[in-house]
Every structure is written in structure tokens, then in C-alpha cells.
Image (cartoon, rainbow, N blue to C red; front, top):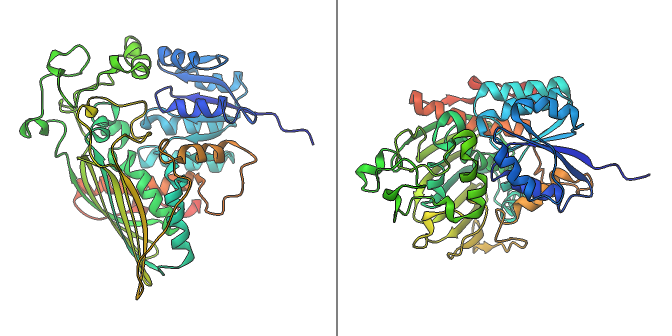
Length: 439
């Protein structure tokens, strides 16, 4: 049989993260995929992405999204907008007869999550969520150990994630600093981690309790002695020498996508991380009980001196420990800027990775993991994109591909945690949204 024609992809949301999708479709997977259009509210960002393509594609204002889908005969929509708009574009794509691949989180509230699930059920179209951490070889090895039964039934999980003052600070200078845009770090960032635990345990969250606050950034920077009196770094003399100031003019990609695009929408990518108006937390503790009976204690810190994470599984036959130090410190001057997309590339500072099984009545055994890369989240981005885009992708016995229900489970853990912060009590996940009809 003759090969199928390439599937036709359109992108909505032309920020830095969009570049990953554009490069994959027009590069490694151009034999099976074709980028046929892009949409955004900002024409300068669309033009910046088009300049990098071997052949420019038609661009549309985001207001003309549905017209773009029809006119360009789109098969699959890639959603990389501000988080609060994900559900709008995913639902519109499904109703137009397209499949959708969306950046995490799937959306930022239970109502938007419900709209996506109902639209998928109604249209029969496909939704995938880009939980790239599932494709990290280390995380795949964790899945294999737990699934093998080597540590027995998992009774509890302890998970600590540290964002250093280079990476963590960046969420407080861009649109993420407003909870209405991102859902806060318990939705935008921790959603990755909640999804990992759901996937590792093959389980769903049942009850969530959380405690957290804004401790370091925002107005708190004044009492800690870090705050300076400027709103955004560009053109501000008070930002000179500030290790938390982002200097977009010094970084070509940032300058092209954001600084040169400001005249169209007034968006400032380089806000002072200690400026007023931050409505998200930077230090959060979460306790989760799963439907299968296991529990998780989780902590996210967004102002650490080093970057990495530790996750430990206590089982009926032993314990599994993963420790990852992505950078053991932030080099002097490094906090003043980010290279490309924050968190996507490994830094020059030292780090290490160790996966250890500790069985009962036996010495610990270290597991060697091959295939790790120093870019793209340990090589996970490349592996994920191949799985999502290629029709000839190999079978996936680990079940890494995440659908809408997976996106909902991760999102609801974060939403329940946010609600617990407000109410000061444990929240039952099904009180926010009952997923039993989507199993």
C-alpha cells in the first residue's frame, strides 16, 4: 500500500515552548508530519518562528483559529498558549474534527477540564498531553522496577522537588506569576510530578491536603533584603547588578520572541520577581492519598540554591530511591538570565543521578540507566515527540502516552491542593470532578 500522506499540523501559541514542536515537525518528522499554519495573538512572535522555517507557513490571529483549521485542512492542533486558554483551543479543535496535543497542564480549572472531557467523548477525537517526564529513561526505569514487584506493594512515596533561584525565579517574572493564568506552581509545575506518581503507581488521587505560602518572591523580597525598585528589567538602572534581573536584550532568542514583540500586546517577559502582584506560592507541601491506599508526601521549593529532586518509594519488599542533582549550585551571574526555554537544557554546573533499590535483608543495588541526554529534559522531549507524532512509533509497553484522563488526574491533584490551601482542610478529588465516567 502507498504511504499515507503526512498529517497536517497547526500550532496555536507562539512562545518559546512552541519552538520544540515546530522543530520536530519540520525536521526529524517531516516525512510523516507537515506544519501548515500557526496562530497567536502576537504577529511578531509568529513572524519570528516563520523566519526559522525552511518554508514559511500561513499565520493567523488567534481570533481566527477556527477559520484557520477549516481553511488549512488541519488534522492535529498543537496547543502551546498561556495555560488558562488551553481548554478553549482544545475544545474548538475537537469540535472542528481535529485531534489535539496540548502542553501541560491540560487547563487550569475543573470547569475547563470537564469541557475537554465532554468534548472528547462527544466528538470521538483524540487528546494527548505532553507529560514529557514520562519519557525520561530514569523515570522509565522507576516504572519498570515498581511494575516488576521487586519492592512489593508500594505503601508510601516521598517526593521533594527543588527549583533553583535561576529556574524558579523565572515563574515569578512572567505570566505564571498570576494564578488565574497558570493555576500556580501546584498546577503548572507540580502537575508533571503528580502525573509521574499516578503513572508509576498506576493509580489516581483520592484525597489531598496542602499547606503553602509565598515566602521568598513578590513582596516578601523586601523583608529578605533582595527587592529593588523597578517593575521590569529592560531599561531600568535599578536592575543593574541584580542577580534576579532578566536581560532579554543580551539573548537573541528572548529579544526576538518577546522584547521585539512588546509593541503588539504590551507583555513584559522580564518583570521584577519581587514586584507586587504575585498571586502564586513558592513553597508548598502536599499530602495525597490514592485510591489504592498508598500515600504521598510532596514538597516543592522554588527558591533553592541547587536544582533537582528526590523520590523514594517504600514497599512491602523494600525501598526504591531516585536522586537527581541537575545543578549543584547556580554559578555567579547565571541567575541574571535564562538560555532558551527555562528548565529545558542542562546547565554547566555539576550534577549526578542515582537510582537505588534497597531490598529487605540484602545490600542495596544501583541501577545503571542508559540513554540519558544533557538537553531536552534528559532526552525526554525527543522521545516524547517521536511517540506523539510518528504513526510508525514502536509499541509502548510502559503506557507513556498520556491522554485526557491522565491530564485530568494530574490537574485535579493540583486543583485539590489549591482548594486545600484556601479551605485549610483535606479535599476529596471527586468533589471537584468525578472521573468515573471517563475510565
